[in-house]
Image 1 (cartoon, helix red, strand yellow):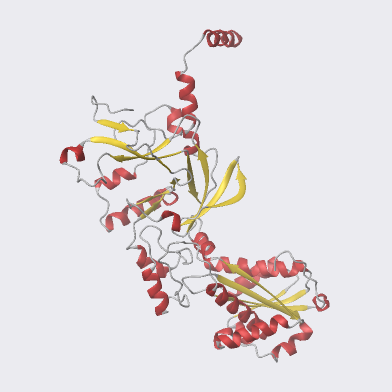
Image 2: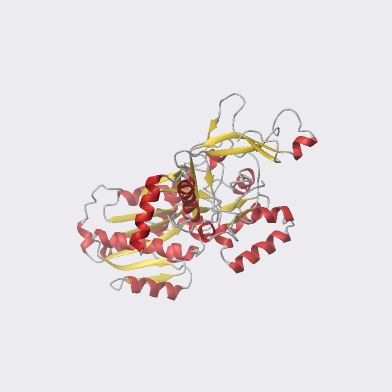
Length: 294
Length: 164
């Protein structure tokens, strides 16, 4: 909602409840979206009458309709956090890997922080569980001591405020994927990627047709997903310096290489980078080697 | 360097028709080894973006490769130096290389560049990086190979006097 000034509605200074839910956690491509919906506690009864249900049980048109309704409802506030697939891949492939649960927790915490900072008097927040239920609840309670947290399995079908959040998230994710602007400019890339779920035949076909021997996939794809692993075996191999730094990792890599039988002696020598070994300190520190043959 | 018959290796730095492709801004040094040799649609897939940020005086760029986030910076080659892309002479031409050509170590320039973008995974580029520091040699080499004049000797002896 950018830089435009949001006028805080009057009800925001009453005790408020908020639901948080996610869409697009499972898919191998596209963004993951966290959505929240909040309203005054006194509005809870009306909310129950708005026929929000777990977004997965609704048809797409119904979800779109409900989303438009809740957007127009002045007694309801909402927000989303769209996590780019590039960010998901990058975080999960860092040397100090951040797993999907942590990314999810941070996203939820980000939404709560944002709404609190707007001046909304949040007293209760309802969420679906991510990872261990009780650990998640404690983590949130420690972060926001003034808020009561209810973390529950299937919260999206138990609490209308979470069902509403799930509609916000799901509709946003579907729209984001539909309108996704691909980073890549190669001509042979099409947009028939389907739902993005690993089991979707359309998604499978798209992955098969869009793998690239050097670059892997377009950045819409979550490279860190297990679904991608079989495809990587067919690509040009990439060895990372950051994986090599670790001695134990290095050994593993070598083992892997010889397993697939590509470690010929020639390849091995290519892998040795210049070290400046045997030269004076100045050159060693800069890994400068004298080269007479190449 | 012109063709030098006395050694096995020669590098020809003049292109045949006088036109040399300039790859400035397109030469990337990645923190990984890609087991692939050949042309690839790099500009369609590899999309560096300027972040508008600076670290240690280096302008920070961002790109993604194989799902990993890379952070890099573009270094200009020092005045008086050029980067060259070399290829084995005779290869890639219409005529299949004869056995003698295949074995010979004759290289020719295919393109040149005035800067290079080097990338890091999991850390920011820094003045302490080996790659940045390797350029120090050029300044050191210049100082070492400069003819010593009377003034240099004078200032050196003054400096020596002071140390006593």
